[in-house]
Image (cartoon, rainbow, N blue to C red):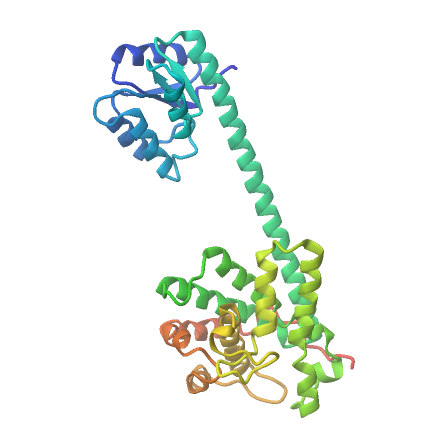
Amino acid sequence: MSGKPSYSILAVDDDATNLRMLHEILSPSYKVYAAPSGERAMRFLEKRDVDLILLDVEMPGLNGYEVIKRLKEDPRLAPVPVLFLTAQEGRDKEETALRLGAVDYILKPITAGVVLARVNLHMELEIYRKRLETLVSQKTAQLSDTQNSILDILAGVTAWRDSGTGGHITRTTAYSRLIVESIIEHGHPKYVISPLYGDNIVKSSKLHDIGKVAISDSILLKPGRLTGEEFDEIKKHTTFGAQMIDDAIADLGDESSFLHVSREIVISHHEWWNGSGYPMALAEDEIPISGRVMAISDIYDSLTSERPYKGAMSHDEAMDIIYGETGTHFDPLLIEMLQDTFPRFEEIAASQQNAGGAPRGKRSP
């Protein structure tokens, strides 16, 4: 391999002669750094990144085995390939080196041909690994962008059917993001939300009303209050939406954590803490945390938004209702955790009052 000076190697050996030899052998092709001890090597690696490490085993103080153990405990340094340099022969020594994570084992006294061939081989593998990692990262980003675009399209379908829903989706997504961030920040043991789960909650909130596409226009677009029968019909949007996502899970397989979180939100965002909600009358911790998050976002926006049959409440009026329904409609501990977050809801409501809405023109029945 024709090495590139941009790739770097750290040589660690307490023998100055060995360090000079390694520098002479490798410096025409690589940028070579030297450390005369394990301790110096670790201090160097705290501030610098390298592409490969040549590591002596027998050194005073921190020996090679101890150094590699520390390297493998550090997420930043663990992927860096380590080649052991040692005068110790024996299969057990080699097995120990490989078990600790070394990629190769070079016996001393070192020879230029062996060292250069081994280093070139593993550097090529490392360069390939990094390129592959970059490609995977790029593909993952592309898939994420595609997923977000599809989410926006699906949310837009609901928005076009209900002229008030587009802004509602934009705002409730923003409220859900604030709630998730607050839960993670508080770190309460009852609410363990990983970054992935939190991200899935925020993304899935766009789909919470997707089942409304299956509700007839005469009910969905009715300008006045719904009758009891009409309300029973519109309640079905939770189960309709869940069925849509079930079909997607069946087509794509059971591995999509995003789809499962979407289903949680769609089916449970109208459940009440005291068990009087719908469609399954779940109570308390039976309701997924994603559904509890969505319930707060959904109700706050409904209260503070204008509808054909009602005016928009102020932030304080909406919060009076939410606090009044804590323990019946809403998870009391979650509401308590969000007290410092709720004022930011008012800012979002004001800044995004008309965001994302569908056209406001007259709809055909």
